[in-house]
Image (cartoon, rainbow, N blue to C red; front, side, top):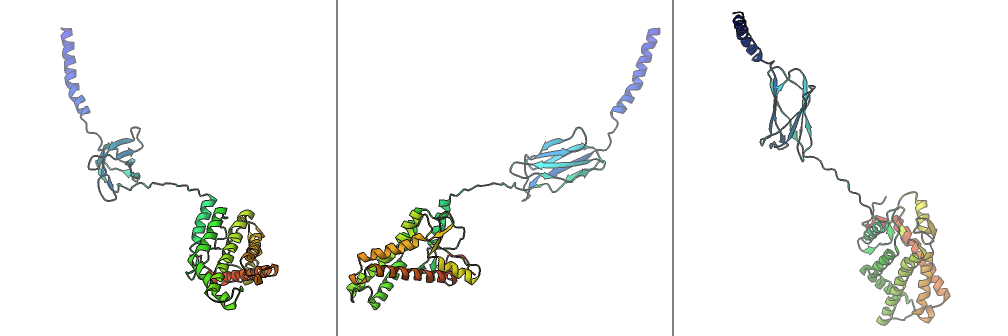
Length: 334
């Protein structure tokens, strides 16, 4: 009987405790919050499969979900009163992070503003140019320079830091100048002037004009090739005129007048202009081979050199103060 009574008491205790336990298990949780949202791009198109990360102070955080085909995501059972923030990322887009979100009990917050911007691709391209490549491009620019758009002005440099010319470029520039149609027309005009002045002493008539044209062409080509290509290549000097363009009129005048006697070397330093002086001497001496006897000799040779030097000084002055203002493709002048 005692045992039976113990079992009855035990069963009664269980019967009483079971409803209490069930009530405790089924007791309502504190009201939790919810966060939902839709991931879109700047065009309001949904972004599926975006990674959405919820971060907060709880040890169970962060939580991660993936947006569905409509870009929708949600987080449930969130603790009210503590700060959360959401970070959204997707391939090809920049990340988006929300400000801190603090939920109220039983609040469902629709997170707005989660628009993903297309990620900016930063690409650094390093391009290395050799000095020869730079000089080649500079010569291409110089070959476009013309006074009044007609007369070649290829031997003037407007960039004070221009790269030195290679021997190949010196010959290229000389041949380009010699063969330019405007140069050939200029030779014809010069031959006509010499015809009128009866120099050299070839006489008159079309035959004499043809000889003067040939002599003028030979003078010009030999001076250009010798003083602008051959000697500058051998002596490593730059045959071009470096336009100053700034400073006082006095300094610019001295710069222009000294150009037949001072040049820039391929090393960038100023040095005696052996190329121009030597080229004029050699060209004048060579003319003795085709000038008539009355126009040959040492005296005529040195007179030609002096005349050529004076012409170079005048031309440099014109380049510095006049021509530079009218040269196409040149840099802006004063």
